[in-house]
Image (cartoon, rainbow, N blue to C red):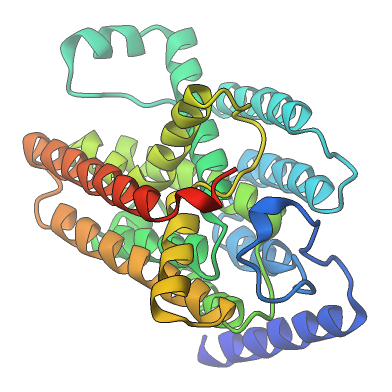
Length: 338
């Protein structure tokens, strides 16, 4: 496994360097939310390099493979500006996710709330709710993929805790393949921090669908663990998405349009101004700070995964920290907005 991962890391490095030298699949589009970028020529190749490790892990899940490749393709068309309309992309996402959830019977079995569990017994509502959760995760993951290492690092943290819980083995993944995906993500993280590659929409969509599926399967395989533990694991990208929609409505902006007012953008501007660092260091430091806080939150959550009240307290505490941090950073960075 060590030899396999070493060769794959070398492959990742050579592919990203070649595409960067040839200026193929470049990240820069000129949109104002890309102000934090240090380099205008970083290949959006991370999603391609995740295909082999993730598909190797889920080789027995045929429908997941098919729809993962379809959602990846939607992201790739977005990266290449062939599918440039956010509304059309979201519509295609909705269609694909509803089809996938319905065909593969991906549904959440319990919420530990009696009235909501009654709703989940209705098949149409159960599929709708699962589709909604996965769509929130996909678009939230795409939102947080705005700094080097933020989404890759967060995904690595979530998979690490799922592995520590024994849940990845429990749902049937091979141990060697689990370590392969973990080390592949670690190598991607290094290359991302080094400005050698980015995930792009293709990678963000792809990795989020995989993660959402794994979380729902894990929840259904082990009903001793509170469903709110799995919510705690992905609170950050999901809340980032919901919070972004609300604040854009407040300022009368379209939720579909990108902006530079996300928490990670505001933290980047603050660090860059306060510490007077260049863009790449400000970018990386911001990402490390956010993921360090998230690691601490998920570590606390990991201590008692079966306790619903405890998990709810963790989730609301995390949301409180987010909102308080956002308001403080917003006050400092008003002149950068919109």
